[in-house]
Length: 308
Ligand SMILES: C[C@@](CO)(OP(=O)(O)O)[C@H](O)COP(=O)(O)OP(=O)(O)OC[C@H]1O[C@@H](n2ccc(N)nc2=O)[C@H](O)[C@@H]1O
Ligand SMILES: Nc1ncnc2c1ncn2[C@@H]1O[C@H](COP(=O)(O)OP(=O)(O)O)[C@@H](O)[C@H]1O
Image (tube, rainbow, N blue to C red; front, top):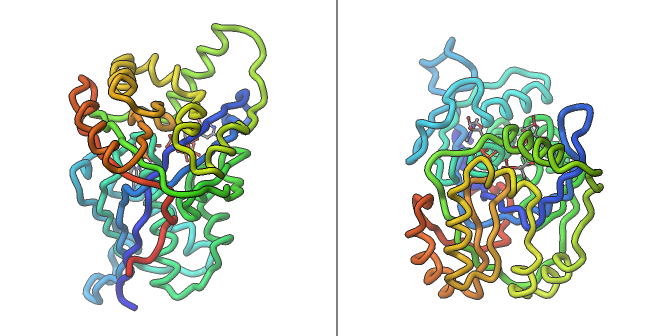
């Protein structure tokens, strides 16, 4: 095979419960991930013969926000492909082309998605045949969210968010995502969360899964799910970017069943009753000051998969 294209979804966090800061600089989480139909595409191809002597892994990024993504060794897709080659114990070559639609530094795990897609694409291109479990182990070293981008669906992540258990769900959930101009740095948002907690004083409870949320997912009840959505990073994201409060209010006022910041933000997520309701909500949300555009999507969808 001379080229493999993989499609990979964005995520929204339905519950993000953040425990105390650990000694290694991470936080223990209960992270309920949900994969939604907003996709990046990564193509891995064999470099042409005349390119011998060039870097073994090269990357090109296309899409509206391509300029915000590193196009060298720091790219998470390149790091993932390099880690895969190391795991296989050989040097391999590939040209990677990333077509980005997932917002960059938007709290939707676009970089992790590209890393996951590169693992699946290079596993196929190089004929390694590694099982999903091995790819998830390699991915966890690249970033806490990479294993979920490989798995997809709806799942709860514990530890740093990398230890996954799939969750049973019914039906389809319909979403609107308010994309903001520019991003928020994930470490900065976790740091702000710690600072706010220190300021408030008192102990930080260990994270636990919400029974109401799990029941709403099992039943496929969007009204109950809307009421159960929570994100412990939201106060920190709002502190760093106060204009997001008006975006959330616009969605609530327009009748969203639930509204929250997606992960570390600044993307905001709104739950709708149906595809039609989501399309109507998007029109109201789009006019909020800090909203660059509002897009509709549904979930759950599968994780990184070779495109048919
Ligand atoms: C917040 C979340 C929610 O799913 O994602 P985003 O909303 O940014 O996409 C994740 O926890 C982000 O995961 P990911 O982006 O893979 O983070 P990593 O590369 O593993 O870590 C980046 C930095 O985030 C902080 N971090 C990450 C995970 C975790 N459980 N505790 C942390 O404190 C640490 O400061 C770490 O150095
Ligand atoms: N392939 C990639 N796509 C997006 N960002 C990447 C990629 N590789 C490295 N990065 C870096 O990772 C940072 C976080 O990206 P991203 O995963 O999009 O955000 P978030 O962690 O908020 O979901 C970006 O600011 C960017 O510098």
